[in-house]
Image (tube, rainbow, N blue to C red; front, side, top):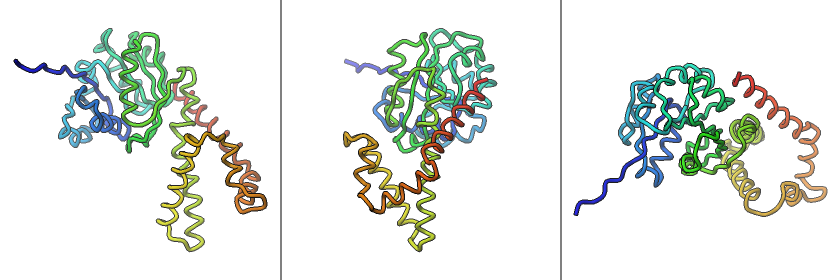
Length: 273
């Protein structure tokens, strides 16, 4: 008796930059690899070459990707996505699901640019996807079935943590998980630069501060304490931590963070026009 042939689901990527490649590698390194056949196209065709050895099928352009796949990731910059959508509109069918990871782009924009009522999932991922430690927010339009949406969510779960939010808040969430890694890196740079200035080896400082970030994140998610309670746990009366916190408060750190988030959101709305 012959064995059953497993029919794989075709998943395509228009764009093979850092984020697109990270998602593809997340799929390849997970149990989903047995269920999915990958296709990809990029203006710089050389970006696809390293992926071919893992079984990724190279396509000439985005239209070829759409023709081959039910699920298609739009992994291009917001500044060029409209042109990409214009070029693939004629290949979209009632079965196509487009997944956009471009900041500021919503489902109405995708439908208008393709000239279709295509099923659309909007995702805000972040670069830690490269290490399968991503944090991705997802939203679907009414055309997408729950089964289709669950499948898209499973891809991002293979690359980290996920959360489903209302699409109306997809621009506001960018600051929280999409752009925040850059803010955290800048914050880390300040501590490491201070250590070097004081004669401490930079690699030692980086190792200790990075582990402090990891441990602090775990305390936020797993300890059961609120943020305010966690701050208090580190802050002995009259101690070193309180002295440092006083300086951060003098600099209005929370207001600065709020302003950074608002600037992110403002730019997202500008990109969507």
